[in-house]
Length: 196
Image: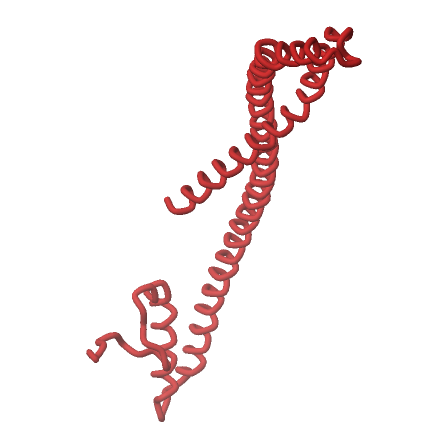
């Protein structure tokens, strides 16, 4: 451990920023030297006490001024903090609003994609029904000459009605699948951002 060459004042070592108090330390040193004297000529104690009280008054005035300036600065800082807190709260509110808007847009985008996919699936099923299923049912009804033989048109129409009724449930399933995929994608993005 290296020895410090800094002077010791009281029980404390002087620090670099103690230069601010050099004048006060000098007054203290002079006063202590006078108090160490065993014999004093004339009014040395009184003169030193007067000098000490005058210098103390100067230091007290400086301390009051520093405190006053510090208080003003603290009030400014408090006002700035209030303003910053208000701005932060507003930004958080706007962020929540923006996130809700983005979520609504994502839902709308998923809804449009689901509607498009459902439309494509519906057209595919309709064509499949028209081209493959309905002709086979009609042929079966002709061959068997069952009770629905005279109602081939109604049977075809019923098949199309069943397809139409399946349209909304299919759209909901596709929408749910797309939303789950979108959520997984968003979670991966959040995880990736956390690791950056």
